[in-house]
Structure formats: C-alpha cells, structure tokens
Image (tube, rainbow, N blue to C red; front, side, top):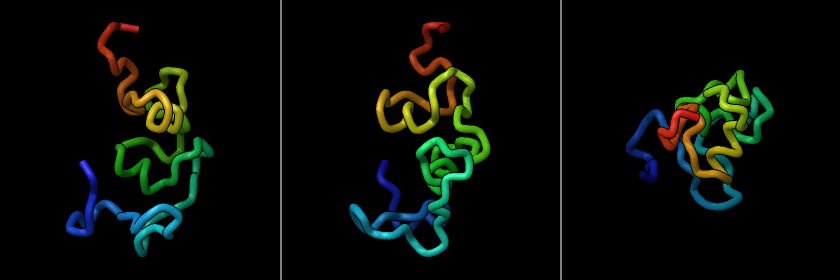
Length: 79
C-alpha cells in the first residue's frame, strides 16, 4: 500500500528528501526514530518508542526487521 494525496489522513512524501505534506507532524515525540505522522499511519503510539511492548523499538520493527510495531507476536509463534 502506497499512500497518496486522495487519503486525507495520510501525509504524502513527494520524494526522498522532500518535506512532508502540509500539516504532517515530522517531529518524533517518543525518540524512536519514526516521525509522528508515520506512527499515526501505522497505528503506533507517539508517546511510546515500543508500542507493542515486545522489546523492539517501533522504528526497528518498521525499518529493519519488517515486523509489525503494533503486534507483539508478528509471526504468531507465541514469543
């Protein structure tokens, strides 16, 4: 899924290095490395660097391990 300008809830980047769409919150309130607008888009908490309390930061899960930052057991193995 790639967000586009037809979705009023999702700010859209025009391209690498471009500023966020008008009104997008590019601050990182919880210091986890994800801007608040991405956390909102993912359903993460902007006040908790580990939304699902699995010991992995939201940014690590989204950008590195490609697991869900909102589901503590992304692969369903019970751990």
